[in-house]
Image 1 (cartoon, rainbow, N blue to C red):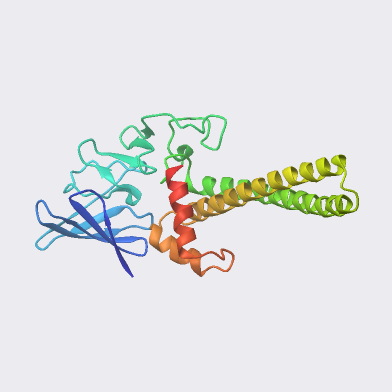
Image 2 (cartoon, helix red, strand yellow):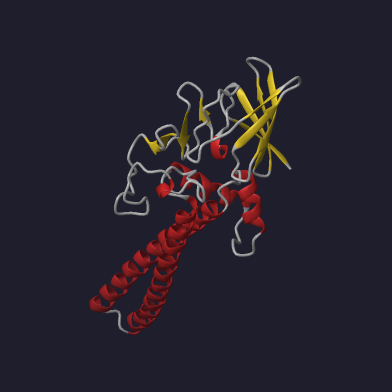
Length: 256
């Protein structure tokens, strides 16, 4: 199934699943078919009369001039004026000549970003990529999986606390019905407050679980477009949510 995305105001990319097939520009009537490698890097483009091959260093530098293509190394969008890549939807700019980012990572040096706050893929761009601009893709997947396990453990604890508060509420309400004293009324009110707090915390943790579940899926399938990823997730049994709810979660994750 083909999908079309606007790379810039002037440029359109046509994809099938996660693979870019063609690039079209309205300003100079450019239409080119794209050939990519397994990482998604554009290695060749063909026009009506001629074409051009593209070669990259391991860190993504392409010394030969290209026909101002929107996509380049690892299928990431290239900024033509600087020949650099904005990764993570503009989170950080990556310079393939310098083999490093131009700004530090907020989750480095003590977090999952690694010791080098400016390093790309922790020095291993052959086996990994970094579409988020924060950490290499497989590290992101493992990090989100670990975080998700922690959230689910907390979720069980909150659910159990809510059950306890429910039991207390019904017992104290029964006692209040028998003896309508001021002290029993305070106990019922206190239990209701604790129950509401537990319920609010449960809703917050459930929302965190949904968001990290989506982050983990995005890290697991980094080459998928958003439409392709959503289609894949909606077909999985473990999600049990509708398309509108999935879109809401994706929007919340993007805007974070």
